[in-house]
Image 1 (cartoon, rainbow, N blue to C red):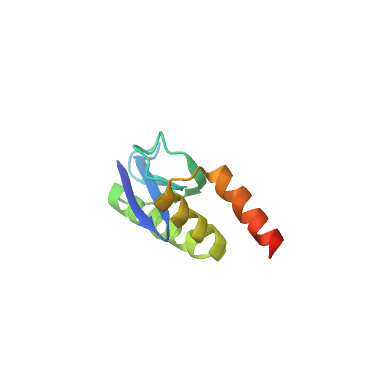
Image 2 (image 1 turned 60 degrees about the vertical axis):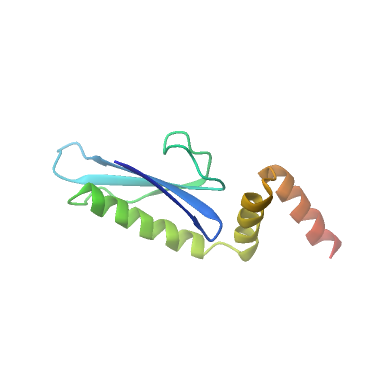
Length: 108
């Protein structure tokens, strides 16, 4: 089962849940992305999160990894959220945004 949503504080999430080896529980993963991906597998992500492998249903697995992803981005520096929002708004490639932010910070 796959789910894509966002933006949340400028980031998009792509999550995936699958049955564990025994087939009785589910594991989940999420990718935090700068832009909305077409699918979990094609997501160009900033970082990945493992949501555990002890969930009773696929929905519970996705809900847990979604909560963990939101928690992780809430701990990012404000600059990361600003860059994500600016990238989404202006469609500027991330490397260029980093360079602009670096020089803006150095000049200040």
